[in-house]
Length: 89
Image (cartoon, rainbow, N blue to C red; front, top):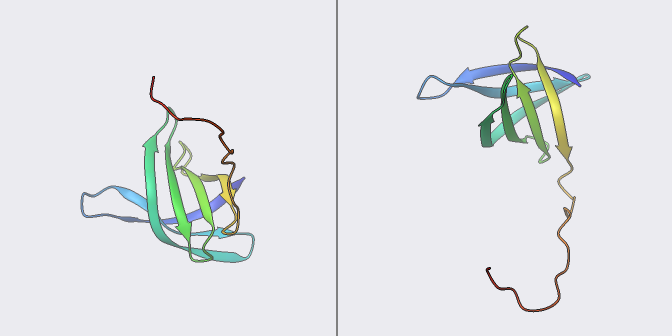
């Protein structure tokens, strides 16, 4: 899903998302939790002002950004129960 992103430069001169727009809602980026490089763009895992987590991809070649993933603040995740002894192999 395409999103409008406003970015800012950090102390090292690298751009990172500062806020983005979903429909009519503007979400401030409270923290950039993780960043990694892909083949076409960078990915940013961010915590929004609404306390939800988002993964943003961009900027793409045309300057646009995409919302790749959304996790609601109340989501419990997908951790599975494990029975038995845990050992490293």
